[in-house]
Image (cartoon, rainbow, N blue to C red):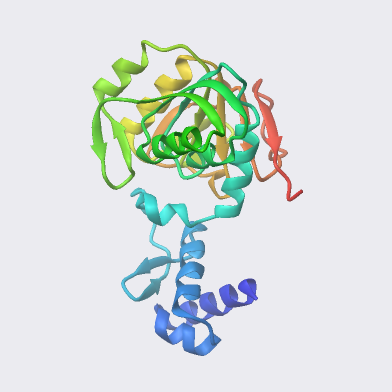
Length: 255
């Protein structure tokens, strides 16, 4: 059903140059909320661009989506990746978690972990790890990094954030991205990218979580060469034309 709706939406867009949520909902006999979710997914796949009340043909943009809007996209895939990442955390670990709508779910997947120290620049992740402690799914400490807040991404960033990070040594860092190619890892925000890079440099293992919508995509700023990663966790198998750069690729399947 969803695929059929998507085809009809794109067909209408091709014919008319613009589509409206209300019109599509009536035509397909679904709620406006369903159409909005469809448009969000199609936009994420660069098949259209949403505007007030509807959508127009895709307009390339280097601007990052607002955090809460991104949270609803590819949600099932993100939770599966986060579950795999959470299983890699060991008792006594000190970990870093950057800002991302995939890494934020790691705390939700934690069970029976002891003495874990979490360092993060994500306001949402800090809240969820605190909840994991409150619910006794883990014991440990949550350290919120200092810096300047970005209300649109629920993050903290800046020179103070990077300088403070350099004092730590992490067993593992869990990193998100805005795009991933066979050569490099990318993100939208330069300052947040510098925080992610600093986390990786202070870690024994740098673990990237990326759903398949990010593969073969570039965004504004390069975080690091792909060879700097220890592990990539994705819902898609490693592309055949990507060379082995020394990292492990974990393909999280439906099962």
